[in-house]
Length: 365
Image (cartoon, rainbow, N blue to C red):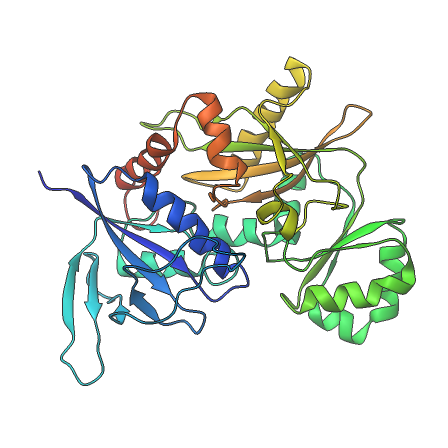
């Protein structure tokens, strides 16, 4: 049999474009090229799809990578399942680039991790790695994510969701509701990741500017009460052959002294970032983190992979923070490191994602 053809899709229209490129560079370097043929598909910031061979996918001299938009323009046809990618050069007759067996959508944030590309691939009848349309959308939206978890009886922290219309028309009521959380609070875009647009607010006079900063990334904002505790992460993988999902050893993220919290610079640009795997926690706490990670994954109906983030408080509480259905897998990321510590190295991890996707049917499931 020939190689399995994998379209690796990266870049995208969200503010996490560069992180997606970094993830793609790491993943493509880890894919077993004896078994898989890679078709690199970049999505430029303006939404153009191109065959992205030769793109820079690493940080160089502090410069983040970006899909240039140069390369053969591509489109995905609809109506007839099969996975053909079509080259659509201006002034030329469209021609098939060839079938792909599975798509690996390494997109973070809106227009990628939020169910949009998943819906596109469902319409095209193409298998893909990761969560489906609903799980992707609900997991991306921190407000709905917490609603689902609360409904499943899982522990989440106090928070207020600030919709666009409410902020514009009922600002005083919204501010009064946020004040009930106490200070400090963390203000976040509801549907963004990689710590984009997050602010810590220590008093009411700082609140409006923080909300507006978050709204630059998303008109919907979530404000969370600060939780004193250690930041713990855990990876989850869908089981093979109807086996239950499984969790990795967890990790504790320790940011450098120049950062008050785990912001973008601390995640991707700080050489002092430290990740402890496993954390210095009692064995029973580690097992409970792993158990809750699987429950959080299953409550949202996730597939493929995810990273679940927690707070562990001084009082011994384990509180869910958020889930990422396509976690960053850059050289600095915890997700592949957690699985390596659990016994699954990076090439085996990517192979597991692809095999899981190939085994599930297209359409409703």
